[in-house]
Image 1: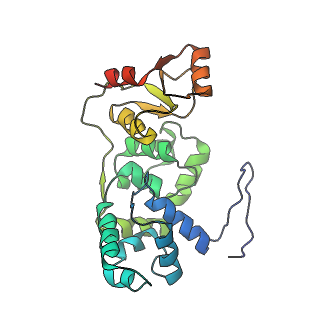
Image 2: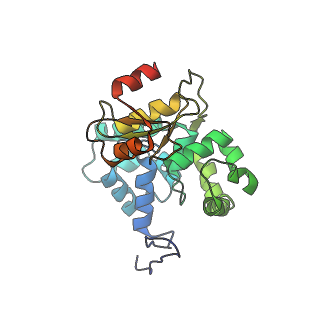
Image 3: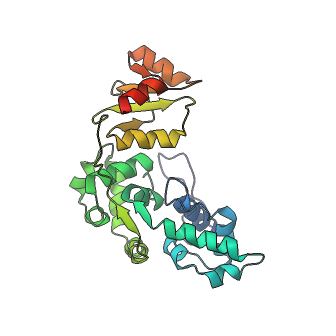
Length: 254
């Protein structure tokens, strides 16, 4: 968009400060629909590029305003692919609070931080009304993240977009688990190649009450190691942390 990029003190990456930058809008939308966010699997990059270029989508909530007429107006679009896309968008309306927070693309809010926020506040309304003191109580959230959150949560455009999304009848389920919690209070690190997808394994741990960390430390209780585990396995051995095989993990889980 020809706007000079900026690089803030203490940060590695440069970024475009123009909120209306087409490239920035496209990337934020691609994050919003991604598998670990709202999981709109049929809305791929090419669709997003076309919709933004045509002016059909400018915000997250515009995705839920797409209809058959608009989609079929694009060149070489068939009825079946249009139906599949609309079905995928509709299916995404049933999500979790953690996924929704992560999907919004707030600076410094990664997947784990989004889960911690969801666990603490349980509803989007409670998060929107959170005080600085309440935010600082959230696990692994420091002053830098809280400052960014408070800025965003007071932004009228951001709040309007949240309301637009909720008006699309998005249902956000609580992250509170009602099932068995064999891993409650335990921190895991997952490394190496496993029989199941890494993200599915992380979900299994969290649904059982555990926490997944990206790095091995003295606070780690277990390292689940698959083939070609590498440096994380070496670190676990150095610190004397229990290393689990896939079979051992399954026994603990069940």
